[in-house]
Image 1 (cartoon, helix red, strand yellow):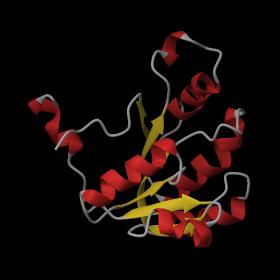
Image 2 (spheres, helix red, strand yellow):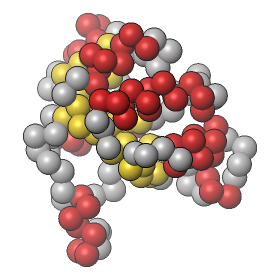
Image 3 (cartoon, helix red, strand yellow):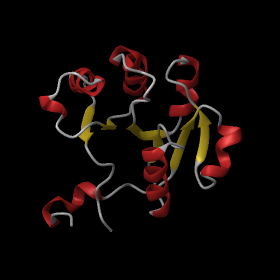
Length: 152
């Protein structure tokens, strides 16, 4: 149950598109489906949008690859917020720097980064370094241990 005093944090602008990275994965798929269920426009970031479209037919699927800077502009076009999941194959937090900078240039001021429970006390996983890097940005970064814990 969400504390009523914090309920306003759970309200989403139904016109703001949210880019969901990892949209066909274990967590990203559920986040995208939850947003779509609540009529929030979703841009599903996918490495192969043509072959993955059937997984999220209600989402706007766009090609995106953290390692390919040329995919950033189109993926972020018209997007107001980002749900960021660190892909398991990327352990270097510096790999995200170009994407975070592009978000900033594009005017995105809200990124939700899926982290790990207790990460502030465990400096070994890459999530700890990501948190440190993201926390120093001029963007509003919310570190979450659960994706969109708002109950409706």
